[in-house]
Amino acid sequence: EDKVVQSPLSLVVHEGDTVTLNCSYEVTNFRSLLWYKQEKKAPTFLFMLTSSGIEKKSGRLSSILDKKELSSILNITATQTGDSAIYLCAVDSNYKLTFGKGTLLTVNP
Amino acid sequence: DVKVTQSSRYLVKRTGEKVFLECVQDMDHENMFWYRQDPGLGLRLIYFSYDVKMKEKGDIPEGYSVSREKKERFSLILESASTNQTSMYLCASTGGETYEQYFGPGTRLTVT
Image 1 (tube, rainbow over the protein chains, first blue to last red):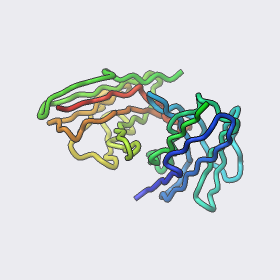
Image 2 (image 1 turned 30 degrees about the vertical axis):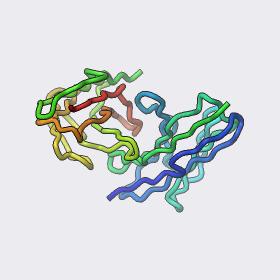
Image 3 (image 1 turned 90 degrees about the vertical axis):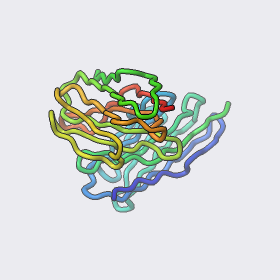
Image 4 (image 1 turned 90 degrees about the horizontal axis):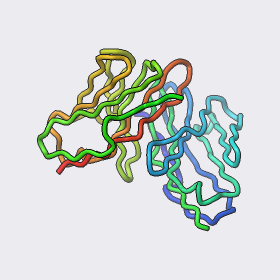
């Protein structure tokens, strides 16, 4: 059975802090790992990672995949209150996504 | 932009009722998915479909069925709704070479 584990489950930081969210997986036939941000609606896509060691970056967010360690991290630098959300990690195995339970990030002013 | 729409944002049904949740995508995607999302459990796959009239069970198909008569439409059916099916239901689609899933806005279903 495919498995995706995220840590921590929740995190509270102050504006300006840097955070690192973790995702580890055990799946058959890995195709890609995806990160989503979910506020009070449906998840929105952040990154898709398929190759180890190549960092994807978008503004203050970045992510990298380590296929040897079967894990990925999502970094957010200089956090803002608008970054408060649930961050979801999902792994595509045979075109089917398995999601982790998410990390609830709260950024306080 | 890909657009995935769901028929209702909020729905309240009684135990034992038959419930239909509709999802439509406008990007000619082959693959469509139904998930439910519950606090502490994350997103869980109920059913998915690779093509018209094709369906595959996900991780939690019990109590649900699906229908895909047209490529753009994927319906989730609760034959006899129960209170433990109270949840947020999310539809998604994907197609072509990308694995990115596009989500609908969700339907919050309450079964009383």
